[in-house]
Amino acid sequence: MYHSHYKIPKMDCPTEEQLIRMKLKTIPDIIHLKFDLNRRELEVYHTQNLPEIETALQSLNFGAQKISTQINEQNFEIETHWQQRRILWWVLGLNFVFFILEMMTGIIAKSMGLIADSLDMLGDAIVYILSLWAVGASIFRQKRVAYISGYFQLFLAGLGLLTIIRRFFNQNEIPDYKIMMIIATFALVANAISLILLQKAKSDEAHMKASMIFTSNDILINLGVIIAGWMVMQTHSKYPDLIIGTLIFILVVQGAFRIIKLSK
Image 1 (cartoon, rainbow, N blue to C red):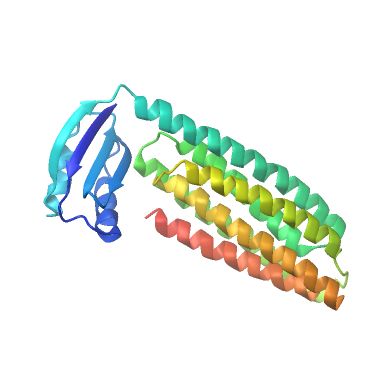
Image 2 (tube, helix red, strand yellow; image 1 turned 180 degrees about the horizontal axis):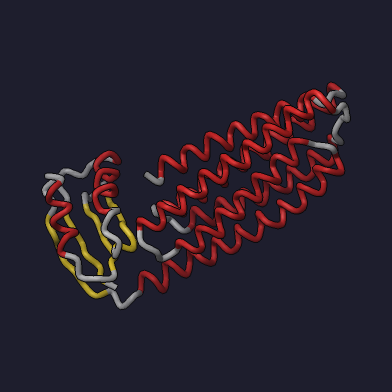
């Protein structure tokens, strides 16, 4: 594993960072980019000695200068990638457990909000599986994972919205608000734990950023289901649950487009 260190005097905001990412993402042997905007420095981890990295950086006219290139003895892969895998396995387990729990209780409680949340949890679990596959891979492969994840979320959201439309017109059952609020509260705690674990990784890689975006959305979704349960209790109507379910899937769509944008 090679570790190259560059000084980039004109890199002082996220715009320059994104331009550099776009420029370097086509080099397949790059494993990881670590940016320090305050010090205007970039660290590149790569599997081969790549003079084209410096050539690509200099073509951006940001004043890039190589400080050093060293053989890293794979410390980055052993420590950072192992930490990412461990965290992703934890959040994968939490999401899969709550997918099953929320789907079962959503059917029992006749709650579209819980069912929507469970499908979102299933989507996240698959995202984390894809992210585990991407750990330690090239930047191109990591971005490809984020791209696939985003479109999978769009697919699930489309199925959910069709189900909600059908329930608006065809079913009159009032969901069990107690089950909704209790299960959504447990899911909220699980997602908060997942987000804390992901933030501890302190990774700027596309697949890890995608995981954090999905988990942040989940916390808002859990709060929405709790609110829906309270509104069902107050109104004795199915519509708060269906409305919140619709909003959940809209949020999923927005998150999916953010992921797709991130992968470009």
